[in-house]
Image (cartoon, rainbow, N blue to C red; front, side, top):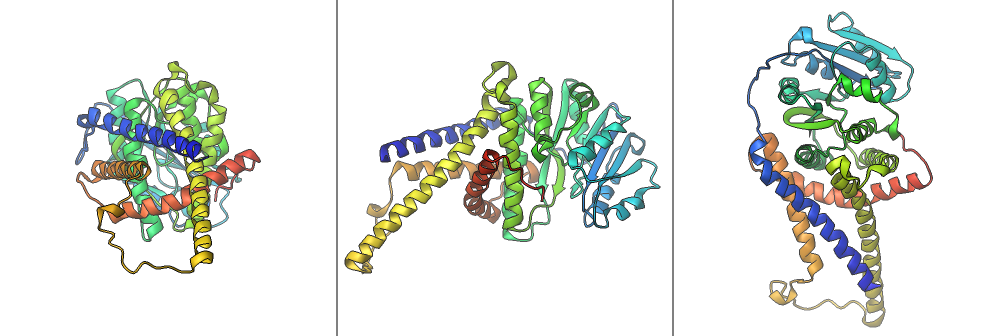
Length: 415
């Protein structure tokens, strides 16, 4: 049993190490292409862009969200904004109505049907060649749209461009941990996947699409409340190129408590598992590129790895506790009078510890690279420590709950 357990551990550790090293090599090969532009830029042509803002009970944030769109450095006559109230039960609609007289804003109110129905209502009123979504709890930096549109101008084959999403209003340890996580996942990893042509999520906060995507592939789908993941999978299946603009910044609010974070992550992971099941036929199919050969297999492995490592941790803790109970029953409490922990004899040289240290070191390095891509400088933040601790404690439970929900076909609530 011990041999089998250690063999599985080493397999998962090797695969995890491989993924992180692969990302690092990708970064080193493409670091000269990662440019953080300062100040304003100009385009040769300014296409018209529509931004859909779906909202449900966002009275505390939507006003600031819309103001951030109106403040974008983009020709005002080329920017259309569609505000969609998806049956809110608070004062969201009253705030939306304040923008009814703005010449480039249209407002809509509908019965609650879910985010994807609000987005599709916006798509049904689309009149421009480019369209994006902005979640009603997020805010765009004024140069973001211009920088995103430069990717379309540079490469006509690009069909969607995602921004760098940065956590804002990080007031407590839970939110500060997520700030480090976003720098890892939404900045560093997303940019590396962009270089590989393997992005699997076009996030709700301000991904911009060519209209052709929806004309050709159809509107958003329910997709287990993760429509931004499903449309990306659909695009990859149809060989539509997705890029990531690392210096287009979108700021988003994050869950302030462990309970709310847990519910959000269960929904995300449940959506990933079930979208992967829906698109299982393209996995390991060479014609679908790195999305099929790298991204989806890596994510699937992460589910099994986290589940196994959590089960092993519980098992090892049980064995340790059992031994301590037996020791106590035999000799009682036995505290050593003196132990020199600085003595090299006491250093754990087991390979499992070494592998764990390497994996965590690479993860910390990745977060610092993400922070550098945002702030332009190397900084080790205590947020990284918060992220490692909170993620290690919560991620296994989120994964196991999402797997359980999948088995019993129970879809988690949005909130």
